[in-house]
Image (tube, rainbow, N blue to C red; front, side, top):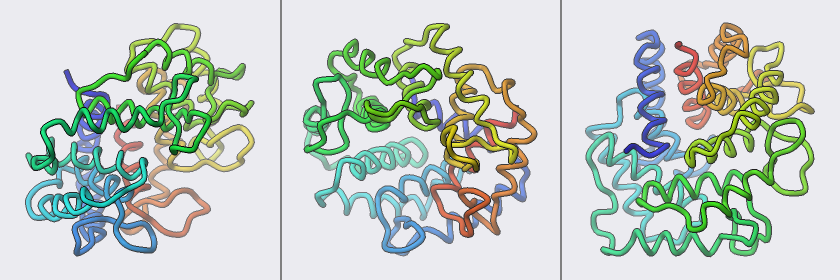
Length: 306
C-alpha cells in the first residue's frame, strides 16, 4: 500500500503530465538550472540546504526529470548531509528527499545506514512527542504543532512505522478544530488558517478518521477563502492570496471531493499568472521565483486539470 506522500506524488505527476509541453519544458529547464554544483538546491540566497533541496527534487519528480546525472548529484548532496547534525525540520526534509530518489531513480541514499536506523529515527521523533498527543517543533517546545505533527507522521510512514497511541494523536488533531470549521497551528489560536487546516485534514485522511461534520466544516471554511484574484488566502484576515495556501487548500478540497466548491478557472488563472520565466512566484506581491513555489505552482495546476 502506498504511503500518503507516495500517493500524492503519483497523483500530482499524472496531472502535470497533462499540462502543456511548453510549460513543462520551461519548468524542467528552470529546476535543472536551479540545482547547484553540489547537487542541492537553495532558496533565493545562501547555500544549498535540505529544505529547498526536497522541494527542488519534488518538482523534478513531478516533471519526470528526477533521474540520471541530476539524481546522482542530488544523492551525493543528501549522503553528505547524513553525517551532519541537522534540526528536525531539515532531517524530515532529508527523509522526504531520500524517499523521492529511491522511488523515482532507484537510488537508496540510506543504504549504508545501520541496520536499525529506522527504529533509531522513530525513537528520535518520540523525543518531540508532547502530552497533548502531537509533536513539537523543537526539544524545548512545550506545545505541539499541527503542521509538525503532520510532517512526522509522513516521515514515520516512510520508515514503515505508525505513531504510538494513534487515538491520542487524533484527539490532539481534533482539539485544534475551531468553530469556523478549520484548524489552527497552535493551541492558543482562535482563528483557523488554510495551511494548518490542510495539515489536520491530511492527518485525518491518513488515519481514515474524517466524519461528515468535520468534512463539511473544512469545506465551508476553505471555499470562502478564494479571493478575487482566484487563489486562496492563508486566513480570513489576510487580503491577498498566495501560492502556498492555494496549493494546500486545493489539495484538501480535492481530497474531500469538493473542488467544485470554488471557481476552478479563476484559480487556474491565478496560478498561471504567477509563472515567471521559469519557476513560480509566491503571489502578486512577489518579484522572484524559487523552487518551493515552483513545486506549489506545478502541484496546483495538476490538481486543476480535472
